[in-house]
Length: 269
Image (cartoon, rainbow, N blue to C red; front, side):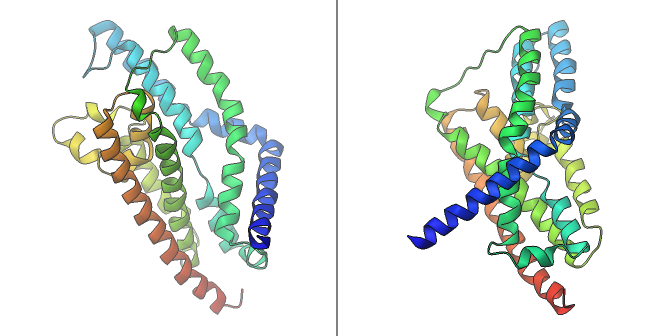
């Protein structure tokens, strides 16, 4: 029990630290949120097209509103920035201080990212509500039986994003600017995740391929689940795919860390 209490105390301390940092840098956080409003730009485009020419692939005007507002919120819930923090701490030697603390450095970054979630939502939800009111409200259909899957999908999206970023960040043990490699992931994410257009609207067999990739698992799947675009069978299938990618990303992160920390220690950091 003492170990459990100690773990909870550490988690609580890290959580308070993360909230304090998020509140202290709330202006920067608000700027970051505003830079993630691309789905709302896509909403205006696709909703306008549907308004003028009718539904597109089963998406009417209100369906596009629901989808892209959900994409904006899901992005806030699942976002991480560990790749930049981890790269900096390795490159500048700040990791040495974290290694002296009684908590794993990756757990430290994980708790800081999670602790900022409430602040992100407080800043992002008013914008989403304004968009919904301007668009005439929100109608979400779907099977209530799949609603319990939503928290699992959101958790999977966050862990996947965090693990991929942490794995790339660990490359800083060998390359000073590993975060620049993450820009490749971001470029593919913008196109293939459903961030700019629902993946089901992609042409031909491309949609089938894209919908089993980690980009869709990180964003498109949770969004479609939230707005009721999936049956129970589809939801379970995509959940299995998502968590398979989570396991692979977590394994890649573990390997990159375990090998990289030996390199870091070899230099006497």
